[in-house]
Structures are given as structure tokens and as C-alpha cells.
Figure 1: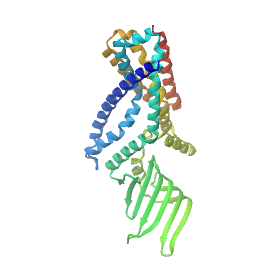
Figure 2: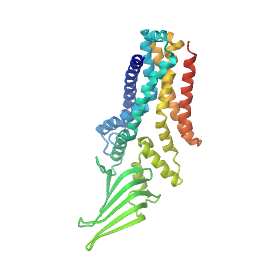
Figure 3: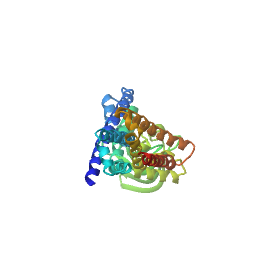
Figure 4: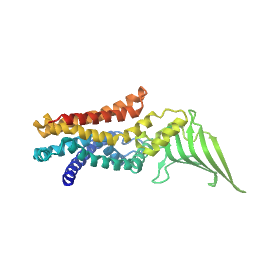
Length: 354
């Protein structure tokens, strides 16, 4: 039985990867067309657009994992059914549900590995892509490979480590005199920008370089006049989808502590966490296309029907999540509940197949 399980798993994973690459390539082409519309604005060039699409490709593959699992399952199992291999397995006493769980287990394991990528690798790539793009479009500063975003305001140099909505985290400010000597260094764990452009720094360490030495002060809070305007800081704000799981958790806690709305960040978090369940649901949903009445139709028809259902549910799930934010329903309900309902429906329908 282990040999059969490995054979089914290998066939499914091969089909899933192929379909995922095709879908990700298609969506990447559409994204490239959208990015080319911005070429020529600021310092944004064709090479920047190509780099943006390449850096966001892994994240796109992760987002498209559930619908590509549905199509990959239909393609791989459909080919096995066409060659009468599934008929032989069923004659050997292997149930349809067993086939479904056999291909679902390696898929979920692969997706758990991808979630590790969503924690450590994909956020780095997407944050780099987003910040490079917005920096080139706005011409507001320079993005370095390491050290974050740098900008200059006369004799003041500002290093923004990580941008978040109307504020930033880990801010370093260097002030120089007219003769080029460093006069003040300020490090703040966090900065908030009000409507007038005033910066409110928290957990501040300030060093003043004088002729008598270095004077160091630590302050819980420090107010500075306009360093970057609110609009300039918002240019560097990272979308929730580019954040890692731990970053999302930390930012949600920070917003709740301040009494602010963290709905978009909760939605991004639950969308990532629900991916394994959604993938398993899509695989179970594929079984009726292979074993059910649709098996009398050609493989091409089944692939087309599966593509329509998979992509439609993908967009429906996205719309449902944002609709839930509008009517103030927890993202856990609008992400996990549809996935669990789809999984239950797939299991129920597969049990009815003769």
C-alpha cells in the first residue's frame, strides 16, 4: 500500500506543481502588464517592473496553491482514470476517500513548508519588491540592500528600518552641522506621524556630540517637527499581505493596544493560516470530477469546469473576506468557515459516488 500511496502522491504533486506554475505565470504576466503602465513615472523603469514581478512570484504561487491543487488533482487523477489505473485501484479495494486523503496529505505537508516560506522568505522578497517600487515611483529617497530606506532633509539623514501605515519602526536620525560634523544621533523604536506632519517618537535614545564629549539621554517620548510628511511615510507603508505571520501578530497586538482597527491585518493573517485547510478542501472537491458522473465527459471538459469552480471560489473567498471587514465579521469566520464547509461538502459528495 505504501508503494501505491507514493505513486498517487508523486502523480498529484507533479500535476499540482505544473498547474501552479502555469497559473502563477499567467497572473504574473497580468501583473507585469499593470506594472508597465507605471514605467516612466519617477525613476521606475522596465527593469524595475520585471524585478517586481519576479520578487512577488513566490507569494503569488502560495496564494494560488488552493485553486491549482484542484486543477492539479483533476489533471493527475484524470490521467490515471483515463489509463484505467484508478479503476484497478478501486477493484483492489481502495476507496475514493482513501485516494483523496492520500493526495491531500503530501499537499498539506508541502503547504506547511510553504507557510514557513511565508514566515521567513516570501515576506522579505515582497517587502523588498514593494519598497523598491514605491521608492522609485515617489523619488522620496534611496533604498539600500541592507539598512532599509534612507532619505535626506537638508542636514538631516533619516534611516527608516521598517515602514508601517502612518508610522515607522526602528528609526535612526542623524543631524549634521554646516561643516559636516555629526551633532545629534536619535534612535527610536517607533514613530507615529500626526496629520500635521509632527513626529512622535517612542523609546528614544538621543546622543549629542559636543566639544566636551557625548551627552546621552533616554526618553520615553520625543516630539520632532516635520521630518517626513504623512504622505511620504504612507508611500513606504507595507501592505498586510507582505508581512510575515509573526509580524502580523505583533502589529495586530500593537494596533489593539492603541485602540485602532486591525481588521485588514487579521484578514491577512487568517488567509495565510487557512491555506492548508483550503488546499485539502479543493483536493476533496476534485474527486467528483474524476469519479463522479463527470467522468463520462472528456478530460478537457473536466479541467475547464474545475478551473471555473476553483478560480471562482478563489475570488469569492477574497471578496467574502473584505465584505466581512465591512460588516465587522471576524476574518476567522470568513476564511476558515468557508474552507471547512467546502472540505465537508467534498467529503460528503465523494461518499455518495458509486
